[in-house]
Image (tube, rainbow, N blue to C red):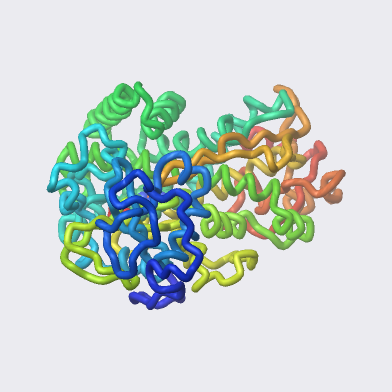
Length: 511
Ligand code: HEM
């Protein structure tokens, strides 16, 4: 990630930590905990009384509101309570987050350093365990070991070209649209966003197509931590193991083969675990990115106004969502390698830090006016920064961008089918998910040809020069062509909705 902001421990712009003169209220405070509620004493650390919980129904009902309370009370870095009332530092400032992400010598990724682990205060059934239990993965490694493992992942991921990814996205988007199109209604979360990333990822990994739908279910189940999560995990692992055996006998142009043959010399277990991490890291985040961007496209006045004027692009919408509704709200975490200072707080060796992506993205120091659009500005924290910065961000963006673009081309009169106020999110401490995105559009039945051509493609074809689709501005696509377009996606153009000789000719190729 590039950023125009300084990488240093800036002095908090907010009042001094715990300043009682700045409107501290007691909502959400751990009043049952030791010392009960009360203003947080200036300069106090993680063992201070009255820390706010960042888990549980109250915190999850309004995480953004909670972050602002914490910012007002503590500045850039706030002491909070995690599940089991284990204390940690939540980093709220944009600059402080960058410092924590970019200074691995002070803030390690190795969770075994956590004092709470060493003192046996994290129970094996803690809901934190799936996220922070140390494993021999690039995610938990520092230094040379991190470079070895991550090098294999990054170099393998970089071998995919965008055009190939777009071909998969086109195929699966068409498949998903075909399933719900006859009804004229759909829920774009459960019928589109939750399927597309995993379907594409299975292709990149090198799995036969029939694995896709089952892996989608297994991955969702795993992340939800339901009773069947262990069985779902077993299914994912067994599928990957089978795939590795096949690719060893007959390598292909896919992630499994490239990881196995990489010069870093990963063991079979390392290959398997990194494949699993890639699948899970890619799925949940890209699902959220697609769902929230579609929601924005369908509801945001700024977007719709720009769209009908022909200046707004899907990439612009993605940038705005990566700032305002980052697919991961926070990353857990980093662990202090020694006593240090961050954002005016005294951090002790072994303390845990939570990277506050959502909070850092709305830090008033970098965004004094939240209504100001940030199209094209990629200095958000959504993909992290420093040595662990997301190595799959181009793939995630490419899936979201192409998928949305193609969907909007196929369903040019797409509209929200419920009032915006009825949309709801479920929040967990590390992310929030749009529950449903009900939409309506003109139904079309199997056998009826798919002839929604982007305007400039149609206009370029002989006889194809009609105007935009009839009716009010709809959630129209923002790129040149849905099926075989050269990327990147271009400026918004409204699609045509008429059956042309061109569409008949190209229909067999547009799958
Ligand atoms: C588009 C949505 C995505 C978002 C918002 C996202 C976000 C992130 C963030 C914030 C991190 C950094 C965690 C840290 O600093 O500790 C990360 C790491 C990672 N991401 Fe992504 N990610 C996305 C998509 C993907 C995709 C599509 C892939 C794979 C194809 C992927 C693979 C990974 C891996 C392997 C890591 C661990 C890297 C390391 O620890 O060195 N992500 N992601």
